[in-house]
Image (tube, rainbow, N blue to C red; front, side, top):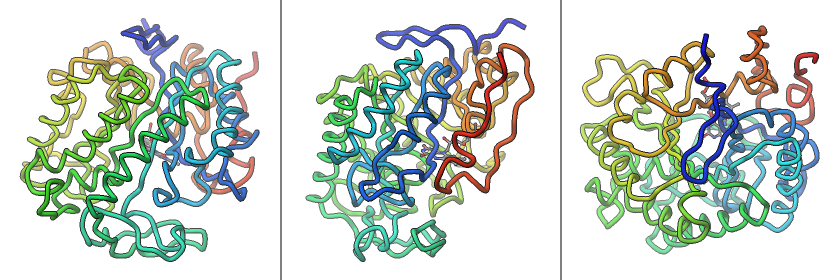
Length: 363
Ligand SMILES: Cc1cc2nc3c(=O)[nH]c(=O)nc-3n(C[C@H](O)[C@H](O)[C@H](O)COP(=O)(O)O)c2cc1C
């Protein structure tokens, strides 16, 4: 079979050796006082440098942005030094990598925040269970952000983007998906504000777009990407609503104006077939709307990934779990080799087990 996934991709400044992208994957291995990446991270990412592009695990942009144990941040000098080890290892192995900039918003827990409440658009508890340093705990009601806190957070993203380039990342991906901070502002189920950041579609998109403006001014649009999960439903307190379709149509159309590195979209996490407020096939819906590089993710295989590129609905395909257990995933695709299955019990643990011990194929 002619492989679309294994063919190079070039558009603007983005030059990729293949279209098999490593999706962002939180792995909780930065269990040191600085929550900084270490040589363990460098080895893990180096093993996966055969990807057309690696997107790093979500990297908190400030202490308030943290929501998972030991997720390596991108706000302190020690973290930047740690990430330099990672970027050097990946670049030396011929790979390229973007840093995913992350703020979990109301999905955090006071345990991470010195006892303070997490921040969110409105004081609405997402009603979910979250991992903390002391096991799984129910989420709490967040503090509704002041306008000052919103502006401050935009500034945190701008600085984090600067830090990512300092650390020699090739670009950044703003995490606006999966029910975290920006997604909370976009969704009526999490945002009932009555100021400029709530209510109308324009207002609910404002925080993300202001942050995108700040980040693209800092590091250039060609080094900036955005991740969205438009039809997330019944997940982390986010539900489809009567304006979800029009909001994401307008938002994605607005992104056409930025000349971004790429737009990363996720197919729905749950089956929304027949639901009046969402489309079950994300790539097919958004391809005609978005004119730049479109990356799609969730549940793809070699066959379905090739097919979606061939049909013209996406340019790049991101693989998550398959990259956890198959560090040489593009090579396995090329050779038609069997794929190893990931061990979920080590997704969020610490240390090398289940992290750097999945073998590559012998030469
Ligand atoms: C262990 C694990 C950690 C994840 N961490 C992140 C993350 O930090 N940021 C993000 O945007 N998505 C994250 N995701 C979602 C993945 O990027 C991806 O959307 C998901 O695994 C579905 O793709 P797949 O079917 O190819 O695995 C994570 C998923 C898993 C399994």
